[in-house]
Length: 367
Image (tube, rainbow, N blue to C red; front, top):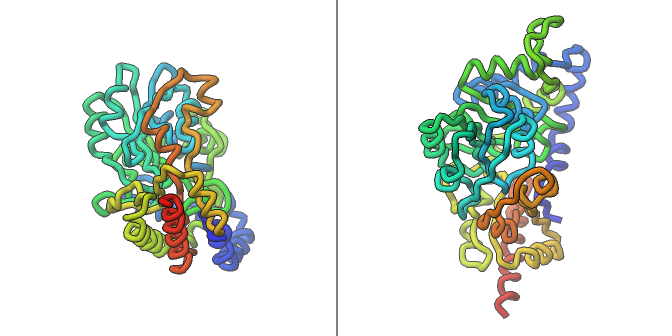
């Protein structure tokens, strides 16, 4: 089976090196907020143009703490999209604010045209999502929000390696959230995340809030949470960062091959339209016959996935707690998008097989 993700293969590749590191770490007793964590935060800061990088238990916690640091809570509205992992909206609800869902463009991303009509006096924040590691027009969104006194929190959970003008995304807004979940391009062996910000006061809040609000071992200056990236995960990530750019390069190569090879099939090219700066966490195509195509690929030992089959406004959690909303483009895309395998463990022959199988499906549909 040609897999849609390479979590197991990546773990097996590096397991000997990581276990060796862990053996050394276990002998130190340095398990919480130690040297390995500081080293990873320094790497992340450098990656993000020198911004503050505060490691946490998850990307979800990074969103929640960013919202809290910016004073977002009950009575406030936060605009985001519905075609994202449920954590984006869950973080807004956890902060006590009301989520407001904007529709997306044909590229699956929210933009000023979909955000602006939803703004009102209660709008306090916008969370644009770099879905699939795809760059969006963040400067236009920030300009709109600044003109309205609204803060911007960038959801970069899928966007490690995504760039705009050659720079890692996540530093243009007031804060951003990255995920190091095992499925991510740079993932640990459990949960992990990073809050990135250029604002010292947000960084100071997050550093305290992630550790119960402690200023010293026995003095709490605010009521926080337990959201620390543990040293074992940081140690593994510190090894993986050495390979990240090599992995990202391979994803871009595969995406370029798909772009060219699939450009004349009924299954269209990547929804990102080859926009530069994409990190290709997902490579997604559209098909009016998505479910049949997915089944045909599976019959030929190719795993293609749907991210995400049910938009958040159709989820039970939303329907039980929020007013109904209609998002035509989001709903249409949810029925048509399909994620193809795109990761560094794929061989050229794997990628060629994916393309050949899609072309065979295309011919069958025309008959």
